Image (tube, rainbow, N blue to C red):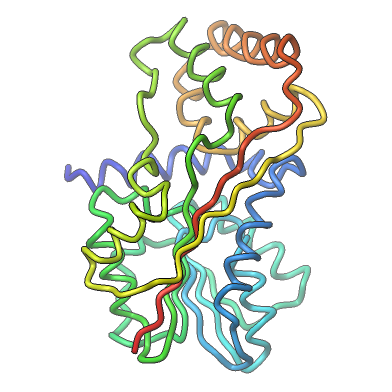
Length: 272
């Protein structure tokens, strides 16, 4: 099995499992940053949009609203349970201009220059060869169209992230993570270098610092259960899971953690 296939399998398992908490109110940042990404590309009525790694619709649904009934949005994600969440929300909003696909962004099969905008929010780093992934997305952008890639900035979810991985290391050192997949592109320089390697010229790269409030330590645990951390938690037996959960909650209470970092880097490139 190739590196890409292994990464796909891990992502599918993790986010299908995390789907039960993915849209928890405390994880509103998914949709906040998705909407802000769409605002940055100034979609016009009637335009066509491809949204990959679309999750439960954080950027695809705002895009469908922006392009209107004469526009079209394709939302693709590997995790069928997240796609099902997005489809349900589209029905509630009565959005009929959006199509959902359970599919790999590297194997969608669309011709060159198919879309006015291609969007990837918090997903490009799941692909081992990010340069190849960006090239593939750029291929599908029409002349005059835009490619928007949004990724996490440095120190994501700190101080809770360190607390989480310390607790994991205390019980399962084999599962302790030493780096995050987005670390390579968590600064404008790194994301800019990725675009350069893909043969794309863009000067529209912006880092935005942010904090996400927690009403209680339980809020953090809901975020962990509805995100990539779930893949690690799913590998614990019931007793060890409770040990990790209790260690997280007690440390957050003890240190009176009331917010976590949610730094983001936005990049938009226009095809000349």
